[in-house]
Amino acid sequence: MKYSRSDAPKRPKPERLQDWNEVYLHEAPEERNAAVRTQATRCMDCGIPFCHSGTAGCPLGNLIPEWNDLVRRGDWELASDRLHATNNFPEFTGRLCPAPCEAACVLSISHDAGGAVAIKRVEETIADVSWENGYVQPSQAAVSSGKRVAIVGSGPAGLAAAQQLTRAGHEVVVYERDDRLGGLLRYGIPEFKMEKKVLDRRLAQLRKEGTKFVTGCEVGVDITVEQLRAEFDSVVLAVGALRGRDDKTTPGRELKGVHLAMDHLVPANRAVEGDGPSALSAEGKHVIVIGGGDTGADCYGTATREGALSVTQLDQYPMPPTVRDDDRSPWPVWPHILRTYPAHEEAGERRFTVAVKRFVGDEDGHVRFIELQQVRVEKDSSGRRSVVPLSDEIEVLPADMVLLAIGFEGVEHMRLLDDLGISLTTRGTISCGSDWQTTAPGVFVCGDAHRGASLVVWAIAEGRSVANAVDRFLTGSSNLPSPVIPN
Ligand code: SF4
Image 1 (cartoon, rainbow, N blue to C red):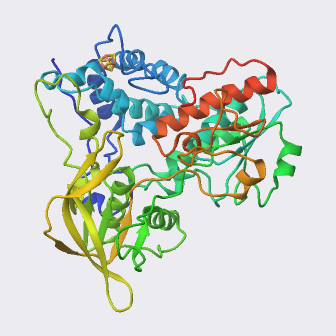
Image 2: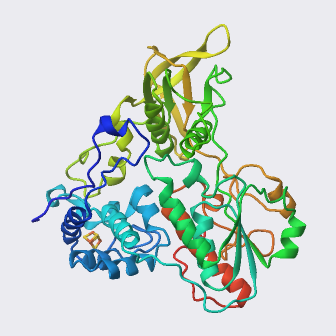
Image 3: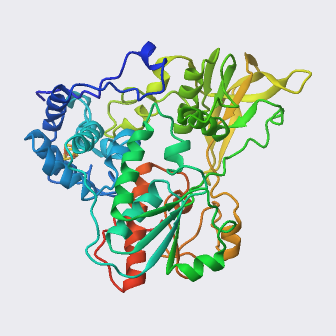
């Protein structure tokens, strides 16, 4: 009650739009640490800490009340130790995770109490203090198991599995199809959410621990399944769920200038890496982003920085509440509040309860306008959603570039899966048993490839859990943690 919640301070908006750096202010360490100690002090060390619980709060089971108290006392080194005990990459989650722990925090129930503990801010600061003070060091395995594991994909799930298995004494080789490591962390997440140097310093730690990396190698093409089987004792598929959901019904979808979100984000991230200007830059264009989620917000902030003439994000759903809808309701509204991202404060416009009726092009077949309608999303008794127009009234908006950020439909088609004889679920993800093993013996799956597009914290939790399963498969038992089970 004595202290209010306060989130990490951001840089001024005009400054943010001049570069691609993270939106948050790089404060002087003493000032930052003092502010975060105050925030950690708000934690009540609940008898039942819902923040920590895997079902309601953190899938990793982060020991949140413990490290909140250590930060309150100023013991950053022990806080780092307790944070890394459950999370391989807290600097990723501190920056990127929408914090289900905060949604679950007991303090989020009451606005009178000032809202949830700023857990995400505390986590990110512990991680940054750890790197600044050298608390993060390579941790090499004491003995070698003599077993070899191939991990396909170097996103957060693959990297978490790789670090756990390397530390358990296995020889781990991570194969990455792209020219650089990191998967979505590299080419999906914009620099203004997490600077790539944050990823690179963690990759350097993994290398020093003994994990090997091969880039520019598509497993199933550049290395065959027969070679993989001959050279490795086990394989982990961490290939993501990158097949973007397309709009198959709106007239005009085939027009030039209408793209899937990742077609915009990947070249934009490559440009920031120094690969030359993006071929799909939004500079000088009226941009429409369709979809109100994380990926849509990433396109929004990217288009703004590229110098778009206008950016408008469309969402079929109503504006998220910023205060409790109904004061009699006991439930937190935190996850809905978090549907507003820093990018939305900077420029552009968000439109809610609207949907595109038609994309309209010019004589060259390039999109120039969209026709917009007010809608409501309805659910039938089976849970199937439909979008119902509220009137015949049509609004026209200029549109030179349309970005479809309406979700992902599972793993991309790849020869590797065919050659391994892998079965998919009806959601387009890779199916597995309760031991994370796919329909191909000795081949395991984790992360978005198993779960469907989800949060970075779930990817890390699944990477840790699959490491336990692979270790058990190779040695008969495992001391590695397994925070989650397959869904
Ligand atoms: Fe602290 Fe909130 Fe967790 Fe309770 S639920 S222990 S107040 S962070």
